[in-house]
Length: 71
Image (cartoon, rainbow, N blue to C red; front, side):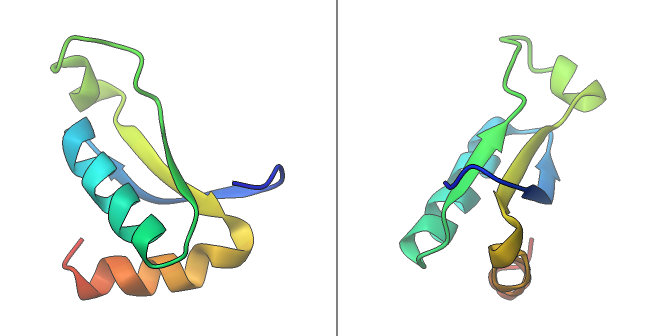
């Protein structure tokens, strides 16, 4: 991902699902990263979900792809 403005496209309580969607976006040419994986305790994710972020200029395309897959 480029240094610059990132936008959150989705929040997850299950980091594995975040990484699945990250991979799907990357496979479709949209650089993406998961932020916020700071705890090994799954219950913490209920309070502080992980976020899937993309470059600001890729936001609309990322949202369209996530909507197509039902996220």
